[in-house]
Each structure stands twice: as structure tokens, then as C-alpha cells.
Length: 268
Image (cartoon, rainbow, N blue to C red; front, side, top):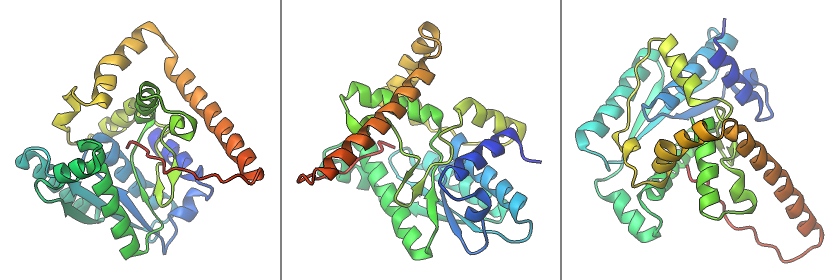
């Protein structure tokens, strides 16, 4: 019997337009981005359970990619990669560790002029796309959750974003899928506690020099205390903005104007 988290994860897969059992069907290759943190470990465990639920002796190939960005202490980042690799061996799941060169993220950040987090994300997604192409994968599945969505919406508000950029993290963009946007971090950690499962903690999550961490560690606790229900209102507003932006874009296209859509960034 599926646990509550696994049922919500299945709903997330169903939201992509194909039923969960079709996504997990034999012949498909599902790539999972796994860092070792609670979110991605829950995604990995949940996907293994869903595959067993729909296909006891067959089903899609689940393949894990973990990226060592080499921007934290070497001992910590290597321990994260080893944790993921060892777990994959226990689960009989394929795994590839991508090691970025020391200093590579900093160099790319300087070239792109958008900061360390964005450069790490850029290199990480490039690695995902490369491996997905090599393996002919159905898609790359990432563990962004409801809390990530709320933090992103707040970030974009403070950065003055508008249109689609103000709609938050997309559940699907090209080959990238995010089936956990309907699941909170509390539900994720409760699931891992139920499984008595360990996960890794990123020491940089407490570094409030990053805007996302300041929002997560300082602003969100205040909002929870002062404005109960703010989270539902924020997500509802983002959904309305999404529909309005889609309508506006469709209207402009119907006018046959010289309209060029700029690339959007998920900030994740």
C-alpha cells in the first residue's frame, strides 16, 4: 500500500499529462537529480516505490545523477556524493557522479555575472541535459517542493519580476519535470522519518548571505506567525498571474506583432 507521500508524488506525475504508470513503463529511462538532501532522497525513494507498485518485475529504468559542485569543503561535498552512490547501490539503481572542477563554478559566475548559485545551477542543468541526451531519457525529474515554490515567488516579488517570471517554478520545462511542487517540506521529512531514512544537510543552507536563505530562515517564520494562510494566497496569486500571462501572450500572437519571448529562468 502506498504511503501518503507516495500518493501525492503519483499525483504530481499524473499532472504532466500522462498517467503515472505510463511514465514508469518498461522502456522509459527516468533521470533523477539527487543531491543527498531530504527532498531528493524522498523523490528517489518514492520513485522506487511507485515503480514497484506499478511494475513488480519490470518498469522504467531509474537512473540517478548527483553533482559535486566543489564549492563547499571537499570532505563535505564528497561525503554527499558517497552517500547518494551508496544508497543507489542498496536500491539497485544506476548512478553517475558528476564532479565539477574546483573553481569552475566561480569562474562561470564571473563570466555570466549572475552569482555563484546561478552558475552552479547552469552547470548542473548542462550536466543533466548531456546525460539525458546520451541515455535517450524520458526526462529529468527534480525534487523542488511547495516550500521552494513559495520562496521563489517571494524572491521574484522582491526582484520586481512580472509576467511568467512572477509565476514561480514551472512543474515542467522542456525535459525537466518537478512532481513534488504539491508537497511541503514537512511532509517530505515526515515521510523520511516514517522510513527511518537518513539524508544529508547542506551547511550553506544557513548562510544568510544568499537571498533565498534569508527568505527561508528569517522572513518565512515571521510570515507564518503574523499572517497565517499567506502561503495559500501567494500560490493562488501566482496561478492567476500564470493564466493572465498566457492569455496576454496568446492575444499578442494573434495580432501578428513582432514578439520575441525572452528566456525564462526558474531560479532553481
